Each structure stands twice: as C-alpha cells, then as structure tokens.
Length: 167
Image (cartoon, rainbow, N blue to C red; front, side):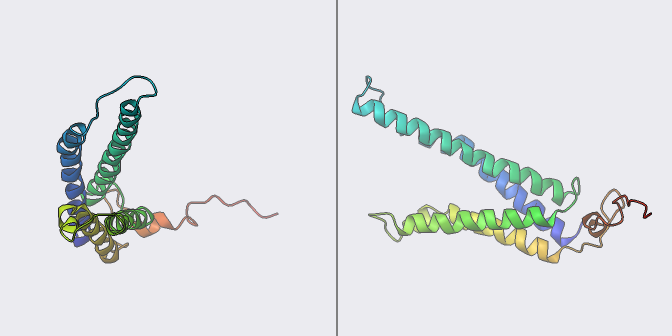
C-alpha cells in the first residue's frame, strides 16, 4: 500500500466517522429544534415547514459525507482505480465546504471568536481536502492496480480506440 492509498483511506474513514456523527447525533440535535406545528397559515406552521425543509437539506449532507467516504475507501484499499479527476473534484468539494463554512460564520450577525472553534467542521473538511490533495500529488500513476494495468494506461485511450481502416 502506497502513501497515497493510506492518505485516501484515512480521508475516507474520517468522512465515514463524520457521517456517523452527523447522521446520529446531528440528527438528534436538529430534531430537538423542531417547532410545534400550527394550523394552516399559522406562524408556527410556517416555522415547522421551514424546519422540515432544513431537515431534508441537513440529510443531504449525510450523502455528501457517505458517498465520498465510500469512494475514497475503495480507492485507498485498491478496490477501485485511483481516479485523478475524481480526486480533484473531491479536493475542491471539501475545500469549498471549508471556505463557505468559514464565510458563513464570518458573515453571521452576533458571532463570537469562539464560534470558529465550536463550529469546527470546517477544520475537518480542510483536513480531508489536504489528505486528498497530498495523496493525489504523491500518487504514482505507473503503479500497477489490482487488475495489473497501470493507472496511466487507463487514462490514455489511444491504445484502446478501434481504428477505421484507411482506403
């Protein structure tokens, strides 16, 4: 196992742990914020509808943690070829999460300096971005994958493209 595969595995396991925490404890914390439902056109009904929409978006975050975790673990343990384009997308995805999380704290009214530590998810997203970036940088495309092909040979398609005979 190369350093790249180890870094991808660590990033994947970290995301899997974050998924578990988010899904179990985060969901319970969000459920505690549930407002009482009122009648039609009641202010409480509007608050409940907004809360319910937020809960659906909150659970979309679960998928944003689970699927990349699975992909990184599959690449890390060599069940899937390392895909540099996918790694680039994951790097920018989690770097974007870290930056937008920081910006949302920065531009929130009533924030305090401690909010950066209390809302520490941005640090974990930054760690994942760094692990993916360093792993991709250290990846040796000439290293054979389990199928015996090199990652580089699967990226160049000229060998595999059928040619049309010239007349």
